[in-house]
Length: 243
Image (tube, rainbow, N blue to C red; front, side, top):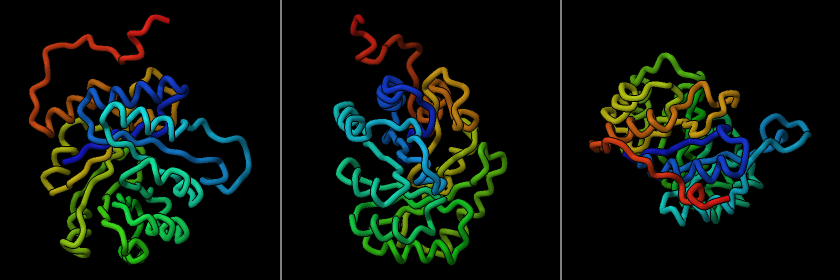
């Protein structure tokens, strides 16, 4: 099972973003994922850009740290802008009916993680048809934040309906550290996405449904059968440089 560290909105500075990449790698994540959007991308209104990282620079840092980089881009322009930075595209459940985004991502012919959220089977079928030139992993997710009830029968419905042509994964919005991730693995999810907060910020939108570093590392060690070390005092490489 591949594990994605979803950083989401859990950052306020460039240093937060840089540290997030190192912490994700240190925990054993396979992928670190950011989001890039403007108020217009999400809400159709003008206004200042939300605090979003320099994606190209972060992708280079991730490459140096030997961890795969991903970014949910939320608009056709941003997907085109950052296509060269990623090996796999992630389409959020809110964009599953956006034909422009689907067509744009399909033109890249790269693997896609498609979150299904509250979409019905017909909407998912249409999205998959639009992504016909891409290897798609269908991501089951519950769109409550945090998710308190998770019914994996819905994942089984997806698998039964769309069959073995696709891989399946789980985008986990719960704060459960062991039980729900383990169930996802038992239901043959090949990828698990989990929100994480490696900072001390508690007033970010994604904080209520995010794991801290200790919890996230415990989850990965459990899923991958690793025995965690007794203790570690290692710090980020750039934190060791005297200011």
